[in-house]
Image 1 (tube, rainbow, N blue to C red):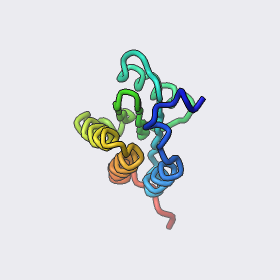
Image 2 (cartoon, rainbow, N blue to C red):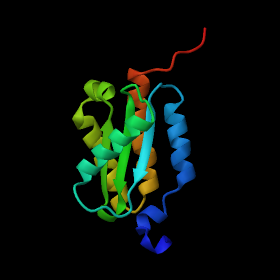
Image 3 (tube, rainbow, N blue to C red):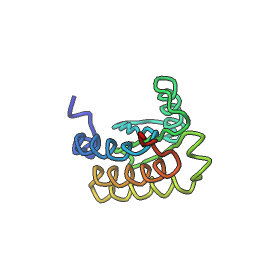
Length: 135
């Protein structure tokens, strides 16, 4: 099975990714998800939209969810935000993050790219959807 996985996907440090997500979500009600599709045929953006729709059905995200959809075999990344956060930050923001993550993937450090992108998405979620502090 490991033979079927793209080399970039094999070297993703899942612990660091989970830790980055935990850190990013700590001060926000937003949720961040990462999906790695080692081999993917077809339209990547369409696949990302389908994956996001499936996530929304399975996990209520209150319009403040973010999905990183990564296709290592193409060194392609799509970042999608729920309607609420998307309306506040715009498509250019997601495109910039995707470009930064993809650049690090091209430099063979997908984990660092995802950690960076997750932190940026977390900053936007924290600003727009802060977690209420107990009184």
